[in-house]
Image 1: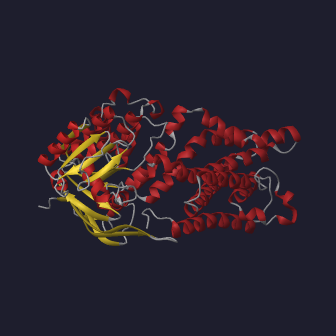
Image 2: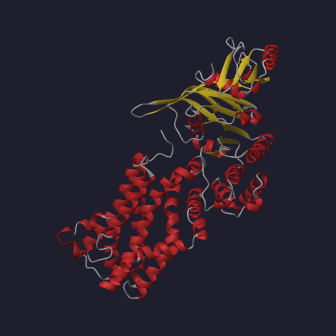
Image 3: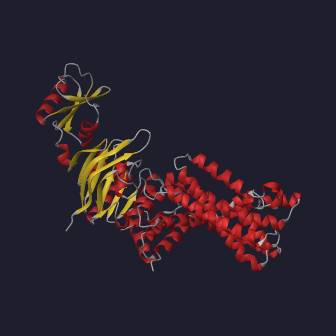
Length: 246
Length: 304
């Protein structure tokens, strides 16, 4: 069995994260702190800390996925690592997975911390951790593939445009209830939470945590939408993305 | 046995857009194994496009190209096993060390960890960066950064290196260190396709070279063969008031109060120098350089 594509994805993930982590270990703290800003708000002005912690996990993972894939393309205009790798025996899917995985390694300590705290505070039963991790993985995959869509379709956009786009989208995705706040806040617009992978994942985690009531049908629909978002995003990217320029 | 490392036939590339650009127009070139071949041309002449097609990053519009016998379109996977590139204007990533550059890129070529470490050590020693292997690129000089990138392709053990202006921006000393490394590689059997704007580099390094202009190869051969394309074999640089010198029949380039005058042979060059000296002007004669020929071939009337 040829394991080179898997190995390549891991090597790319390592080169996209470990050197940065070695030289700037404070990155780990920064990613965690940014995602936990809303927690301070909740603590000061009231709200459910369990809700906040689930939100922090979803925010971290989606923001990392989205930003990583967009920043890769703008950053690479200068360091041309991708250009060098295209000319190497590396499969494009290995590259894409590696690029998305790299920042996940950076955010892993923060995620583990938030997950641990959520379980410790009793906001997530230990038996539901597997479901929570599965939703987070899909959320990360969706965020990454949406990022790849933007970077692929706006490949000629300026670095600033791409940067602003990723930040605006990232913030928009993480503040959609029920990421940090109950879905009821959306009132008649609750359907909005089904569209976004972040709110979908957060809804599922809350369901498994027992803090949000959903029918079994609604749970299945949420899982399906989450999977469909990932699949659709990958299909959209594959229409336009070319490992070799034409 | 196939002696050609690179062979392009009728290679054309048109960039689509509102105003399509024909970057290559039926380029045919052959590069032998173990040869350092230099591609010269003005900015936008098509050099980088040619390299990108060979490195499987860009599809040609027409024609075909083979690297080590493999078609760059149909057998890109095989081509990639044999090549390594230094892209144009590449900048090092500030958080990488030279060691990490060599190590990660060699791992991606499918080498084992042990092979990777050996190859990285040899490459970094060859470019004299072994002592700086663990220093991040942000702390390296411009020359050291370029050598770190070159070490990366060296460690790849690729048969064909495609180097797009690898010494641009380097000082003379750093450049010569890179030259020495490249010539050593060629002596060991590596094939190198180099693009450069530094004519001295092309003269010092190339086994053969080609000049490309607006997507067409306008000259190809050894240095002497390229130089022989110019009908004037000598040049005289005259400095001062040039009135009274018979320059009208010769092609010349005016640079302030200096003129480069091109003449057919040594006798005419010495005659011109003699006349200039008698008039109290400074003058010196020399054989034409590659740069002279290059300007004549692609200069678009820069020279009178």
